[in-house]
Amino acid sequence: MTFKYLFCFRDYTKLNIDFTVCDCPVDSIVLNQLKLGDRYVWSKLSQGDYADIQKAVDLASASLAAQDCSKRLLFDFEAW
Image (tube, rainbow, N blue to C red; front, top):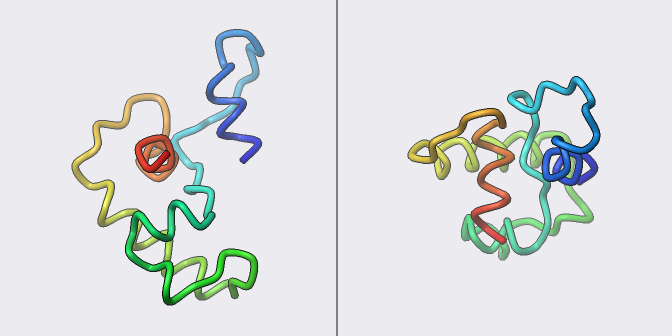
């Protein structure tokens, strides 16, 4: 989540962060957007669950046009 906010305020912080490698933050809204809300609980994810969700984000975000952030991070903006 921190990187999401840093991305929003990147023009003001002037930090040198590569946002193209960020994952999508996982919460109930993202899980429901991916239609995985009945399979996973965001507060009880294993590493394998997290990896599976990021793969689902990759598939769902394939059509998004990412510029200076990752498609995974962009998916979170779209979901919200």
